[in-house]
Length: 359
Image (cartoon, rainbow, N blue to C red):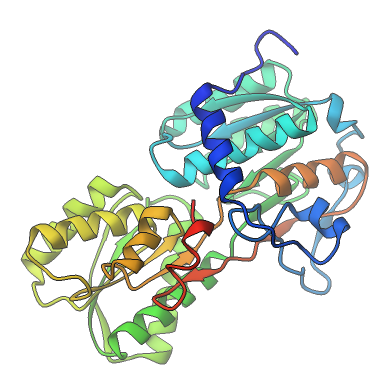
């Protein structure tokens, strides 16, 4: 190991153990799929959806990279946000666990929700000798300095969770993440069911400047307009994907729209902030229908407790799929330029029995 390699802390190790204990025994169809996709089922890694016929792929030859033995390579991982959010905690833990499992040297950095720091973090990872990069981008734009440096040193990049606005198989290899437009559509379906398709609803928008917010909003609004014209969006404001901000925005919402019927929060943390605001305002569980996206343990418990109507999952356990993608790519195999993961959902019908799947 190089002297600058990061080591797992005792706290992270404990978290990994807890995640492992939460894992169920559901398996993918065969051992080859499991190795490629990561363990599925309760508490497991992600499972990639079947790619569409003719979906674009990338190889090291096309990208201009070189073949590597992943087990002998150094991988740099750039986390975007403070690890106070359960999604980010689980995401980083999954990357570290998979690197340790494979014996791969891993360098890590956390941008603490500052985009300028993330750019310098990734440049530093390259300078320290990272042969490959896994990046969880804070923003979608502004990556030109990193892409230029990575291209000069032929360092392949895989992005997870959020896209960067650049060209796949030229500026970066692959994006691994959810279909965020579809998440928005599924959240809208949950809201339509909860409200009967009529009423006034609010949207707690995610952080501006990234594709997750844009696409989750588009999917939700398009589905509402098509299937439930009786549902009217009367309020929308960013909660920046943060619980405290989600609570503050919902407090403003209750003051300006006391007769609100539903709230679509574009992540669980904002939704939980909304719950806090509703409780403080004397509202009863279920009086305002809340639908969120992520799948954290606290949000799913909120469904069990009837404060939240439904949660669309966005699985943060990127480790197995990210490293299997890097493994295939460095071996000269084709990998998808966009790798979409399958997400489940938590509803009043399954939340209690499926609580162990949440993170």
